[in-house]
Length: 126
Image 1 (cartoon, one colour):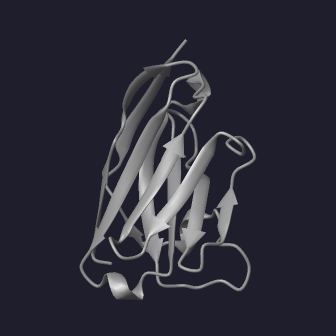
Image 2: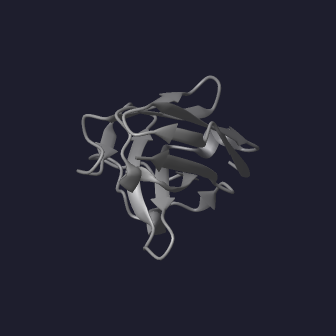
């Protein structure tokens, strides 16, 4: 992929839902893994979820059972459905992609992803 464009961020109350989308453009045929990361003010970036083209997924413990990542290979789009949102989910969310394909589930380390989007803000109020 040469570019990633995120959409779907916004503001919700605790317990609400949001769906983030990320479209990969350019040489999307060499994308094998896509992921979502987030960074809150004053905190380090953390991996949220990732998925590869075979459908294997990986989630951070903090979002398991609440977030679902999915990949539409035909549309070169990865989505993140976020339910039961909490104030601690407030952050800038970034989409990332890479050509690497993993035997096991994709890793949640940002260093494994080469292409990044500009980010979309998610704010959860109590």
